[in-house]
Image 1 (tube, rainbow, N blue to C red):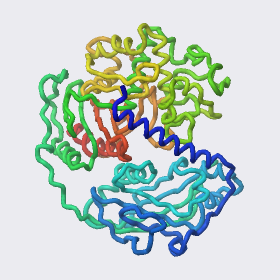
Image 2 (image 1 turned 30 degrees about the vertical axis):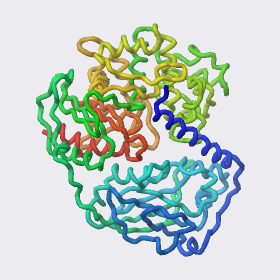
Image 3 (image 1 turned 90 degrees about the vertical axis):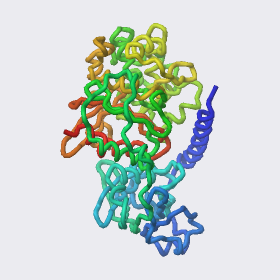
Length: 557
């Protein structure tokens, strides 16, 4: 039986699909280049400006009296902007790349936004080309930009704000006192190379703090004692307690939102174990796509035992691909490795709602494997996050191992690790869902990380071959547009920089900011669980927690 949350999620998905189906029908019509229009006197008087307001005000009701030059900045305050352009984005992009179709312009370019604090450039981002429909890029001349908002909203602006605020230091610069925030917007396009135009809109506002420091219960700041019965040997090593207490204070004061647990393993021993927001040691955390990495581990065991030949086996060994829609010979060449590295060439991109293989369109269907294999192929294979492909990998395991995926994983993976209290989610075919959603407590999640840290060996038993572990967490594929991010076999790779030193980590990650970090040259496995599923800062706040608090605390000499 579906839970209330599952039903609510299903309704949300259906709503999203209906909205985007409508937008897609509009966007699919042949577009003719348009410069747009000046909508009213307010628009005419503020062309080229970015104005600021607190709560959102509909454009038709917006007046000069609503424009704010000073806005309070803090946890309880919103920050909205409105941008007035003289013409459409596609008209600006056409000046950079003349002669292209509207569709080509819209799919190759967007806005570049630069953030200044007190006249110092802090952050510049080329907005993802998938943000905004081609239709609106070719018609819109006024944009509302909801940077800081209280309600959950599927819009690019809150996510960009969080990258500015949490990943690039903006939050700390603005957190106290009075500061000037300035924005500059330019058009950019990337066809053969990136071209950036002149400033098309700019504006500034003074942000000031009117909030007293939040009074936090001292009991929530203190480091939590590790109770007996963890199942892990305990570390007696020291760490910087002040850093951890400062982190606990920010979690308690909701600066870091919806964090539920932090576990640090050092040299195979439990160094730190803390729980937040009404969670405890026995809480089963839904870490979403972290489950993909568990699937990768089980795939490795199945290959080690000979149930699957190797990761170079092709899909045609498991499916009659001609029975699925959009058959092409390119599908015959797709391998298990291609799906493991998210480089299969299927038209599936979870980062783009215009992609027909986006996971949001998969969940309402009756057969997720068929959904994946029905997708057409793209001309050029590149890394695209394709959750439906992970479902196919789970199905391959299910049909190849004795007893099916769930039983096989229990006997060959969970039992040897001593993981007993866990819970799968399931596909419509009642197969364990390898797209994500497997739930267990934080200490058991750490066991996956420690198993890989120990090259597949657990208490003297080689559960996964060393060779599979090495391939899984190595840098198999470069992730586009992320300077230091790579992808392995359903594992990610990142380098952290602390006090001028670099620290490489492989990690599992899931929606909401859930992570299992496995460090290469230092003896740590770090688990962070979170339920910030709909918050734009979910991942960026965890990165800041790691860089400013956890890593400096535990590598402290």
